[in-house]
Image (cartoon, rainbow, N blue to C red; front, side, top):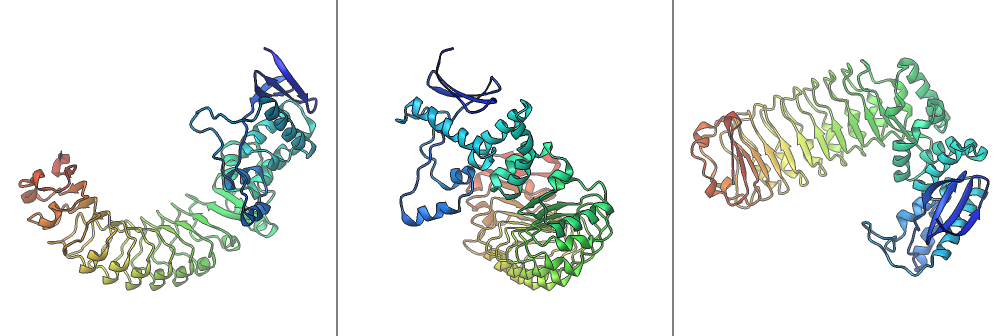
Length: 440
């Protein structure tokens, strides 16, 4: 192997230019072939001003245009001579070394592997800052860096090291929570900028939501599945940053009126509980996109459910619903509506206003006919009308342009007369009783 150039940064880091490629050596052993990060720097005054907020190379790589980089393994021909590129890498790593291995100065996918190798090689500075950098960048880094560290490097931290950057007040509350359940796993905990953002307390047999959680004011994701909860506290409405709440497989009988204060909530999974009704305030959840209430004991829905204008999925299988509110037609963004195994005799005509509906399921009800008007159900892709007293295929179903999957199990008179040729969509699958299927 012919070495054209060599630059020694420390006793542990050397760079060599070999056949036009820059190679990093750690303690004399080949470590990495460098990749040059090419960024298109904006020229506009307002765009340049935005660069002042960049705190790391990782942020720069996300905020700036990297279109000069090679894509999909293709060789990109640019005019930077290998030697110039080599000295650029030398300068970057020299600055990184002189700044105490500050990982903000290199892209994370080189900074952390290199820091790990240096620590393994016995570099005293790397040994000193390796864990500190992991904890600090996890706490303050952008989301891509945090996910990278979570998958690759948090395993090198003890629990106490991992928790070291949490704010004092939340750390105190967390310690009280850990005393209640000593095996609360750090795998179910995330934090950012000192604030706990994710907490998973699944399967601990909690009968109540621990009051310590009330102090996690930046909490975005809370899971308390497979516990023994019968109710949620009124103070749950104080968690206004909450985006996802999972409380399925409990014994919940009701939700508090304060629930409507969760303005940021996007996902609620409360299936397999004993809910008989929902508070009117549920209509205040203006950010809600998915509501999963499968297998509860709901006998009705409040009219305010029609205020959930961003709702995309409404999942209500296995309840005791006999009617639906007319306001359901105001759910302009609804794409999935599952009503299987209820006690419905009819669907409200307002369902025809759900122009974005892609999936509709009413399996196991008492519905005799589907409401219809010209131009309705145009985006429907899957329809399940199994096990209802429907004796004739509605004519409009044949003309649905996007219908790909039709389930008609338990409808013997229809199954025997079904005709594939009548369907407007040339690619459709029809599911029949006895796991039979026909398609074209």
